[in-house]
Length: 584
Image (cartoon, rainbow, N blue to C red; front, side):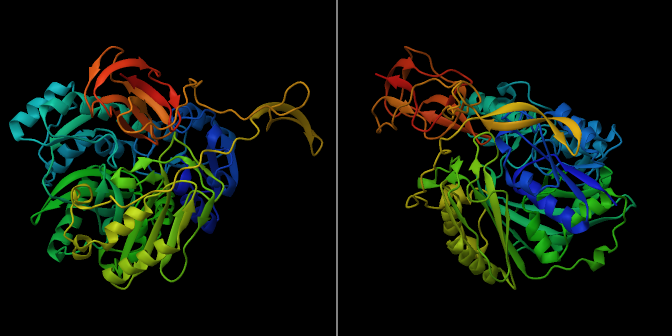
């Protein structure tokens, strides 16, 4: 059995892994960025070590820093969670080359399936058809245009080394190809550390159905059941459920067997998910996520299995002690993701800030996997997932009604969340009937009456600075780093000030529509300035692109005119309400 696991992640998944490790008597090691020094996963772990930096690239995507912590802590294994390095072949090899166990598939399997292009080829080789598309990475937007002209619009640009909808852009016409290609590359690089993308057909009204697999190192690969993840916005899942509604048993079996074939084709070991698009009775291979999925709890509730426990046991060399015929699925489970997003008018804008109140639901059949508590701050630099709310019911409608009750009990203040939008989704007749698709949320639902709560930025207080102190501990002289209030020479604390980069002082109130004062709706980082001073622009034209919580947001002109001045450059950090350009 494993003795000490380092969790190379943060937020609710790090907390999730820590809890199962504790139940199994396995020690845990947390890592953290400067911004996560007091995070929940840090507080719960047996040991915690700093990685330094604020952004993901400076911390959770810093391989050398993580390897150093492994050596310092004596961890014998690493759980990557999801996102960050969870599907990165180089990281997995860096871990295993140190003689440390990577709690996931072999690097060779990640290499085949983590690269979405080679995974399409591998699936095709065992007779599992994929969505029609190119099997090479894109060199330029021209190839997107060529593909669209040949196979028809719309088409989808997708991250070759990622998943979960990150780095995915739908292109409706040739005129959109340049901006979509550049945006997909930026998001892919930011979230997965690699910018390569590919293109495929974008189906008209598909359902997103994925199959959970579990494989040990003794030649046993099982499918545990499907999850329907069709309720999405911006290609990001909002609601997931198992089993899929109105899903024939023969298709379920065929999809499960196809998932096993794909897994065995790449020598897969550990927990993984094979994703499909399902339309008009046919299913197409989409990709394989070589990691634990965000929505894994719905499978746990209907099968009674702890998938994290089995990840740990398989990594330790144990064989599965049950067969395909032993897998049982009971009742129905639904999960909603509680994201820090403002759903006002259906915009789903990132909503970083400090949680001032968090009342959690309870009662029969209710589970909450949270990465934050009241008083914790949601940073612009990381994913916006606060928690996952999961319920179980004897059938789908009982689970749906239980979820609505649990959402009603959940109170989060200080940041806006997606919970009001989840109520709209769960209450809609199309969802009740199970006739929704991946495009349904954005094309059919009306969120115009939703008004999110305003986000509350971190409360100004004392700035903390590092002080290296020499102390004696049990008679032994040691050097320690303490984070203490910054102070002037007279001992008076200085004003609180934290930012990834020096931020220009151009604070302005949110401008009224058509005022010519182009302001940003949220805190974030400018990743692209799309105009120049003196340029003529039209209403709706993109002025800057703002990244917040790993999502890109176009800030558009609200009036036509000439750009009189630009107040930001690429790389600048901005706050909600900051004026970035003036149109005259």
